[in-house]
View 1 (cartoon, helix red, strand yellow):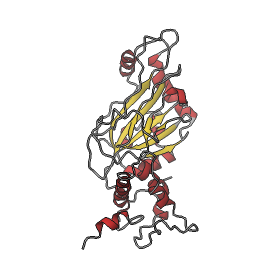
View 2: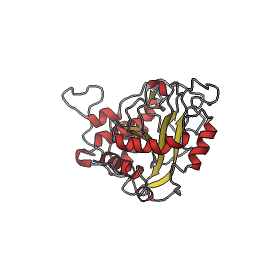
View 3: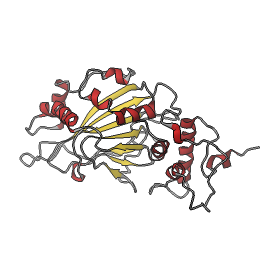
View 4: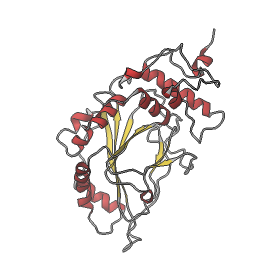
Length: 304
């Protein structure tokens, strides 16, 4: 169940791929039981809750750089979750057959406790990038697993589609707390979001009475990320570009349409640079230095 070319193009353009409700209920319940039991029901501050989670060793201790799939062998229910066909296929398509484990973390957003509202520290997280200034064309992915239903009041992860190729210093964007076109995760239990490492994001404020759990793991490729997906529908012929402006209404090109879709926050001038950056990433992924859409790269490379 590898990704299609259209799905890859959508990921290149937006920096996110969503697998809604892909994890079965039994696996979600097993994961929640593992992490909820040490927390208990008594009102505690966030620091105290995390001390309990660390003491209970709810997550395995893995060193950076180990083989991701090997590292989780025998660790349930995570091994079973990562072995699901749709999840494994997406990982293989983005970072290869043997991705390297970078780190993982259990993010907990505490809900309101009407019996002791002042005990728990609760706040929204600032907008940030999870990587420092990183000029590589290659990229890591971050897998976000939501084991429970996330409602609008639970403060699901806030992210800005299409921001992943706008390289910044991690927290330099913290003052941009709300960006036009940003999305908030609202999803059924067992949903997995795969983000490009550069996506702008932050946790929302949990206004519900339910603790919200998010398990995150970062994966790095151990091979060139070239044509790792199902390429049956890939066309890299550079001499068959669609006409510009006067587009044939009878001609459908879902890859071009996905790659050239503008985000609401794009400015009229610098937004064009985002399109060029997408195409540069697309050339890396396809392994073709001739591929182009709407002549964006060919035009600026025409230097005799």
